[in-house]
Length: 118
Image (cartoon, rainbow, N blue to C red):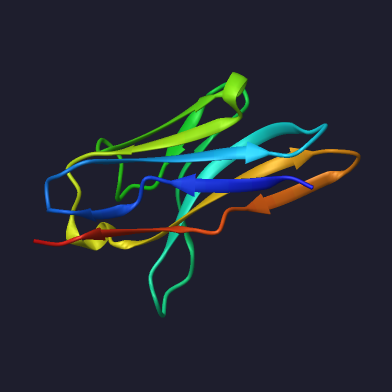
């Protein structure tokens, strides 16, 4: 079984920065694409940023130029550096990974709350 554990959420003022981390743990697995999603109450979960095994990246238009996704394959970890945060970035952020063990899996983290408020 593979688990994703996120950290780094919290309260930050508008214009501030946070870095989220997500580490995969388990046995005998390989990570493929990874991504960060976010969700606010009453709305659908939306893709924020994704990164391939080869570190190609993609971003939602709303975060381009402000957020940066990266990964450390040796540590089985994906990061989301969030700069110039806005109140509308307030959400629960979820880590997502495509994982292969003896079969293909899509795994989600438990979520970490980011609140942007003065």
